[in-house]
Length: 161
Image (spheres, rainbow, N blue to C red):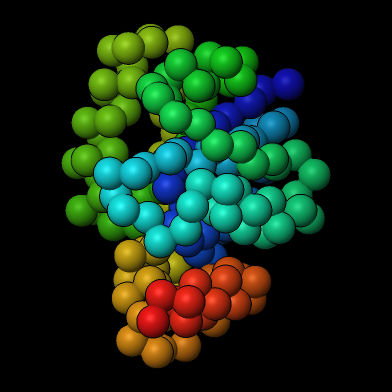
């Protein structure tokens, strides 16, 4: 069975992330959504909260699972016996950064491939950062995230006031 790792901070998980994941599950026998600790990004949700939100969102996908990791992605990929890394590209502006990451990962381990996938065009403008900002300002994020993620965002932001 071919395994792919779909890494990210997923702070929070968006419908764009889910679209890329659903596409990846059609290509790989097993896809692990790997939640990076990403403390340098000052995440809104803890790693455990993000893991729980992702697990709930992917429960309907039999060949997807969620996990968290800390450290080098290529080491995590090897530990999961995976062959590929899946990365989402929303716009041309994402490509340069993602290209550099893919080349560095290949340099660290030439046996791991990076697969770039684009979400549906209706999701190309969605990012976790923008979703959090809309939620902070009291906007409706329901078109951009699963309902349970919207609820978690509202609860988290209320508790911070």
